[in-house]
Amino acid sequence: MIINKKYYLLFLFFLQFSSYAQTDWVRWEKFDPTYQKQDSYLQRDYDLSINSVSGLIVKPVINAYWFFVSDVDGANCPFYPSCSSFLAQSIKETNLLQGVAMFFDRFTRDTNVFGRLEHYPIYGKNHFYDPIALYTLDKEKIKIIPAKTFVNVE
Amino acid sequence: MNYLRLLEMTSLKKMSSLFKSLLIVYFFFPLSYSQQIDFQSPQNIKLFANFLFCEKDYLRAVEEYQKYLQLIDDDSVQFKVAIGYSLMNDQTNALSKFGLIKKTSVFYDASKIQKLKSQFLINIDSIFYQSADLLINSNSIYSNNAYKLKNTSLLFFDKNLRSKENFLIPFGDDEKNKLSVFYNLKNNPPYKSETLAGIFSAIIPGSGKIYTENYGDGITAFLLTGLFTYLAYTNFEHDHPTRAWIFTALGSGFYAGNVYGSIASAQIFNAKVNFDFNEGVKLFLQEQNYFTPSYDFCK
View 1: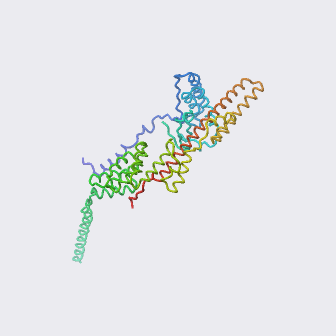
View 2: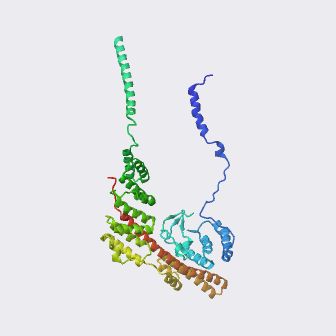
View 3: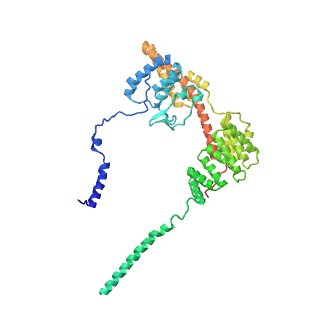
């Protein structure tokens, strides 16, 4: 049987569409959507390996706060690192007394809602960058980043 | 009639064949002229590289110039390669390329001051000062430029600056005004005392932060400490010891935080003063093109 060349070309022409087309199996397969807001900002360090006495006192309290309050309530702290992470890190970096003083100072900054944009660099979409290094009283560690600069740490 | 029609058809056929042959000639005409230009000739490579250089596509311009230099020895192109690297802020390569400029070249003197600029930007302090002194003491037309760059660079370091008159010797009147301001700032930076900030905040909460021009945080510290102290006081007064002690702890925490934060705030203020000063000097140097001559290769 002789195949008509015209029909053969037409057949090939339409075949290419079907070969590239998405199959219905992909389109209709089961999908589990999540409506939870993905936020890389909240990277909790729940590690409870205690290295110091201060860690023994404070870390379980911070972990409990994260688990029972913060993770449920959402990322409301305007700063990066968040106030609770700031406390954990500052105690780790310095000592219990200095860390607590740094935390109260941070909480004061957190309470002041005026002029943040003119004061802090910006981290991510809607957080202000306020690292521990600025407040350890170690001048060598202070690195000035101008306000309104977009910071991408890690 | 038939004869006429035949004649018409013949002429039409002729016309058609003539048209076809013209079409063939038309299409073959460009072919016969194509590939006549040798794009890889040294002149064309240089022309293309010059075009890229003037378009500020220095990376590709340098690549083309290097191709050209493999064929022809040309000191102006060598200089442009080095300038290209310098403009891309690849100072290491710029330095090595400026080093290739021969003494006989007209660009030799210019390459010296450009090398000095690269050394300054790479932060090779010892070599920079050695080269600067050599250039200052030479008979180069750029000796004074080197002197200016050396003196301005001193503003970045914690070394003791020479007297103001000596410091300003190489500069012109306009530059003197700006550098005089920088000199005064370097010698008397408007720092805030950390001790004073701490003492102020210990006496009146928040005043240390206001002293370091952190007005919002200062007022907040005052309000928070005041509020919790007041709450502790009234709770003690009304015989609610548990609440009173909780508020005392919080009040003490905010008080301690405010004293600590004022000291930290003074440190940050001083670091900002240094940062702004360094940025100002850097900007000044950029505006002055690091006291190097400007070239217009794209006229």
